[in-house]
Every structure is written in C-alpha cells, then in structure tokens.
Image (cartoon, rainbow, N blue to C red):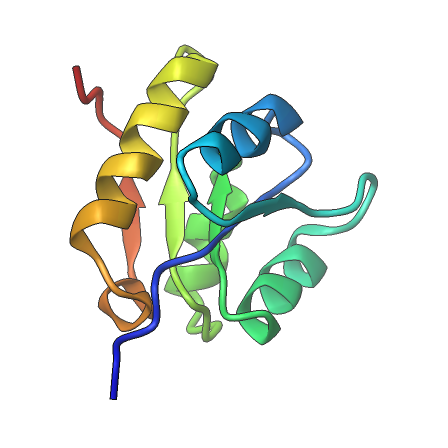
Length: 111
C-alpha cells in the first residue's frame, strides 16, 4: 500500500496565496473558512486528514489538552509567504501523512 502524501489546511490567519503557490508545486493545500473558531478549524482539518498550519498559539494549547489531530505546523508573525511555501514544500517532500499525526512542528526557514 502506497503511503498517503501529506496535505495541508491553512487557518484564516494565513494568506490564501500560500495555497496558490503550493499548488504550482503539486502540493495540496486549502484554506479554511473565515471567522471560524479554533476547535472547529482543528476538527475540520483532522476530519479531512490535513495538517493544520497556523500562526495562532491556541492550537498548541488544544494539542496540549489532548485534542486529537492530523498535525499542526505553527509559525510566527514574522514568517513570510515565501517562508511558509518553502517550509511546507520541504515537509511535503520528507513526510507522509502519519508522520505528523498528533504532533506540533514549528516553522523554521528553509533557504
């Protein structure tokens, strides 16, 4: 059985441009709806089998509280669209969907 490729879910704090740029590289990323609460975003991403990408530290709190999820990637306000695109492409190239299940990764620059 072939492993499932990693797919991403961007919360409303991230630019939809990230998903558009990732699509150019064949990376599956969608942006969640606006004005939804954090738990709904996390549960939707999990139901869709997608790693949630965010700048919001509340998702780390939900993880610490034991909420099951497909993975969270947490960045900072200073990370640019390019930083996100490069990092998510990197993660996509080395990870499978199960690799990030119930874990939190922190974005770092990939140049």
